[in-house]
Amino acid sequence: MRESWQVSNEVNKFPFAVDVGCGTGHQSTAPLAKYFDSVLGIDISKEQIAEAKKSEHPENVNFKVSAGEALPVGNETVSLLQVAAAAHCMDIVQVYKEADRVLTPGGVVALFSYSTAPETSNHPKSAEIDPILKEIADRPEERGFFVPGNYMVKRRYTDECFQIPYADKTRIDNILHPITNTVEDFVQFHKTLSRFRKMEEAEPDLTKQWMEDATARLLNALETTDMSSEFTYNLEVHMLLGRKPHQPK
Image (cartoon, rainbow, N blue to C red; front, top):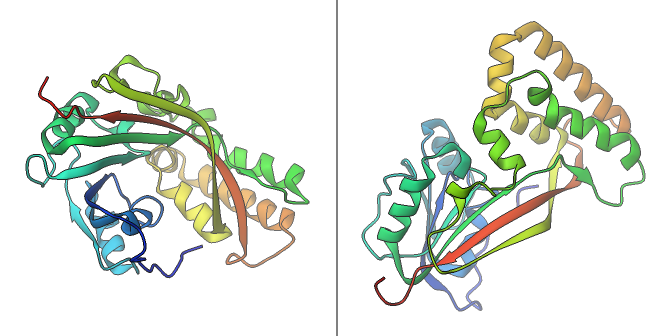
């Protein structure tokens, strides 16, 4: 469910945050607005950035087409560099080099993603709904359309390449992140994933029929026929955090 974003003046803000791989900006970029004077969301996809610019978002949030490996910001200007569910699609070594360039002394780089299928929270029909959500999330893997980055996510960014090259670092696991979406938004989100698009290109008729069937079963489990009906589910998130030293290495 999309909120009407309003920036509070009651929060002591940091100067500048950059959200790498922002997509349309709703899930990861806009929530930063009340904590920073300025927020920049970047994504390599022109289509995603076009959608982000068209959507409702706080006045202190801007969007730009850019790769995470070549950030369009100056040296030591960024308080937080965030990469949300996208680091596994990038050259992470180069991203960390860029992070070190753009972060202010004491600035933070944060990577996070989700590693499990969505599960509903306290829904009376969870036993019926959750297997369908899992089926939709896992279908590309079952059909053989996962790429190496997808398995990195399943390993919760434990691969050596993801380990942040700062002494002051930590990781947090088992964060349950609740999301409220319409059935339409849930289905469309999964259709935009690269692994789903690969499956759709290789098996167009089979994928179309399967998704129509899965959507119908999800609506039935939710006891509705309305694609705009909302439901809430949790994603299990893992996060890596690192702070740039205040003094040169």
